[in-house]
Image 1: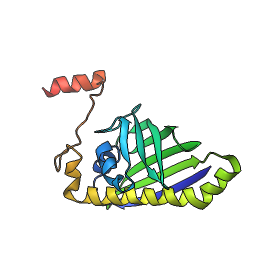
Image 2 (image 1 turned 120 degrees about the vertical axis):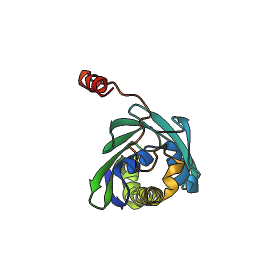
Image 3 (image 1 turned 90 degrees about the horizontal axis):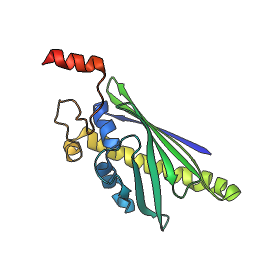
Image 4 (image 1 turned 30 degrees about the vertical axis):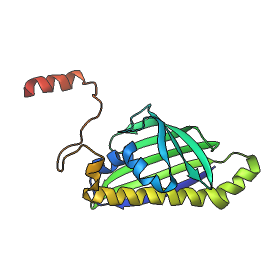
Length: 184
């Protein structure tokens, strides 16, 4: 198994970075150079725990599909994608977001293993690690460019200076219901 780690600093709020990273429309946009597209599961909007997406695109002259599920999510600090089906024997991607003095640190940790036994292990080190690192850098450059400009408005329904909009209602605790009642 191979592990890739990558840190990217973004001069934008952590909420914006997190919401862009979990937005399928944004991901479709930066994946266009590979002719990759979300084709089933959640194909528009935000991803949440339990959601799955199948991506289909061209890699090394082959049309490949990769289905992953959001296994864990802690807004606005962390989420994990796990491969359900695809070309890898194993694939898991952890996304970490941390507030820094000058913006947000986005840290990726990808763990993967290729099929084909010993041949796969050689491919992991000679080809796949470098290729996946280049895809991560492409994605993070798009995230940085989008989050630091006004382009993020195309993907998020979050007015400038306001708190992020919840796309799914959450269950309130009895304490929160009481506080809401007092506030009215």
